[in-house]
Length: 151
Ligand SMILES: Cc1ncc(COP(=O)(O)O)c(C=O)c1O
Image (tube, rainbow, N blue to C red; front, top):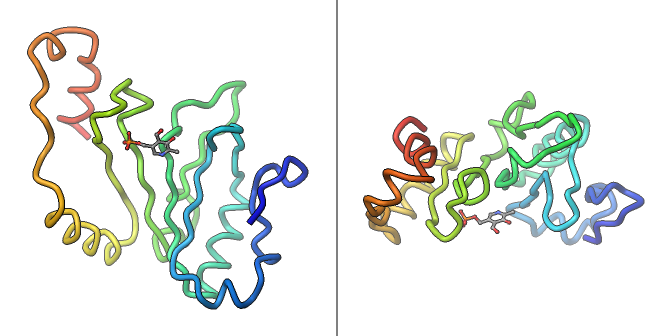
């Protein structure tokens, strides 16, 4: 689906061909976006929820840039929109907000069934977070540690 400046880099959901929609199991969206910094508003997220319900599609919102919003734009979590939990989950990462790119530490919230399946999958392919060094612990990344400990 092309994302164009005219549409604010938001997909025009009802222009997606029917045969594609029929085959679709999951839709990934990410706002604030990378690389064009596009933002979704509540109306768009509500449309995504209706579209997902109508077509039985699971929504994954990648919210990695949740804190990187300027000019007083509102910071909108997909999960804050009514109905979102019924259709999807939202990921975030410590990479951007806590300067921990490469550490591969993130979290997901949302639909219980989807999270349980994800938990089962991850328990088979991952085996823990790396041990952070003492210099890191005592220094600049203190905030990251606080985030890991307190969520
Ligand atoms: C939109 C988006 N989501 C996720 C990631 C990756 O996050 P992580 O470092 O936790 O794998 C990136 C990293 O560049 C990103 O741009």
